Length: 178
Image (cartoon, rainbow, N blue to C red; front, side, top):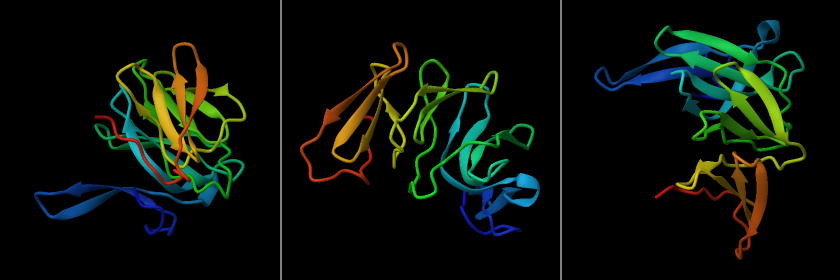
């Protein structure tokens, strides 16, 4: 996934072909016809085999959306083209897949995407824009650092809590599951 470049200089989705020591472009992002562009973060594979990602710009209101790519059928789809991602958010995360098979994203709200239906809902409004994505721990909860706290989200109870960290700042820190 590259934020710039491609035929419209609006980013592109590609695959690396190690045996050929080259890559193949799978989709060129473009703002033509309200298309999504400037993809960011990482792609996550849902239970349906599709890869899901976020674009920071484009769509019906110009503020981004969600796309999927089906590697089996070589098919790109704009799932949501009216998602608001704050312009100055430095957003670089991506979705996290939870044990329930749903995808979660924190972009000013904590959003849940059900890949089986492509239905989206805001689980928690007024949630911080996370600079990193959640990771899932063995207890099934999702965790992400932001500022001087680590957010813990329980997808079953849909509860959130913040755990204070005693560092000067962990804005650009990441958590790793071990």
